Length: 468
Image 1 (tube, rainbow, N blue to C red):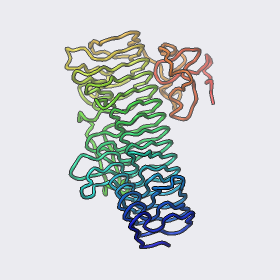
Image 2: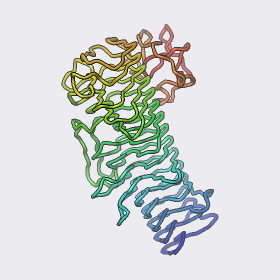
Image 3: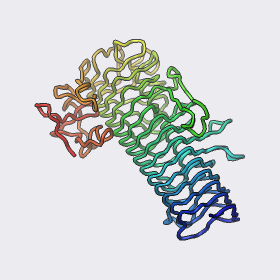
Image 4: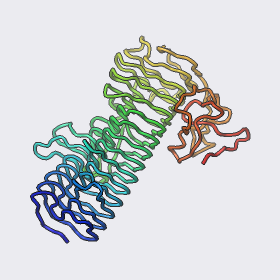
């Protein structure tokens, strides 16, 4: 055991050790980085209640980027940056929990593989009143997290709105589960990206921004999350958003009792918001069973929103405005090869959405439609900037109960089959099943693409042609 040691430089408990196995490093302090250990290879070590003035309350690797630690428990440590781990560390199969920092409560600017990053906290400390990244944080160096669970982390400050990133700030997540994190701005992720992740029930109580300013989201399953200027969203399932979240006691480091946020009628509760902060493209996505003030809203000038080969179905908007809302004099929304079907206004179960125009009912919508299918009952009397190849008033003939795993797949007699415009990205791409259950169904069949996010691979006898 290494206990109650102090260093005026790096490594409060242990500094530059090739191998430290199955020990305990507790209650140490560093005036710089690595409150518990710096530049040490750890294996099966318990690292707890250490303090660093700079980075890595538990562990820091500020000189040797090739050193890594495995099977450690890193708990209750404190630093300015990286409460648990910081400075280019590589951590494998470890638990990183209940650590505290201003920037990166759990980890900062390091790489984690197969870890549990739980209940860490980014909070203000003295003059450092801009906390970021409850679970993970990056600024000048990368922070990459693979095959890990990031849950119950929080980023808070009581007197200011300047806090971002509940699960991660500028962090890149691969094949992770991200849930029950808490932050007013970017509860799931602020900047950075996610690939092949499951993202759900992250709480953003004030600004309703769960996934914010991400560069891209790819092959993710996203539940109960809002997206603000999310960059490129590709091959994602987006479902279950309703403007409400609940955290039970013990599910998040910040919320002591049951935390419930519920006001889906508030105009801030929009599923997709694109503003002046960046582009937004939504490609090959399934957007279903959401309930929001509006589903796609473009509320500032800037880059246009493009929606290509998506299926948008069975959603409900809870205001008098439409599911696609174009506020003020904004750049346009482009919809292409997309199915819009079965969506309802809260007070009218018999019609699909209205498209809400820029200023009012007498103005035309700043929306461009190309090769889109609008389901039965769609009627609003609005005009569009451009409308070509519209297959209005058609039933896309979803599989529904015929295929419980993929109810929005197309039946063999669907009028949407082969009616899309082929684009370069489709060559070698797969339909939405690649995100839902790792299915590999090519996006093109005989050189043609179907409308929506599914490609029909039934043969005339109803047998599925499988590609695995």
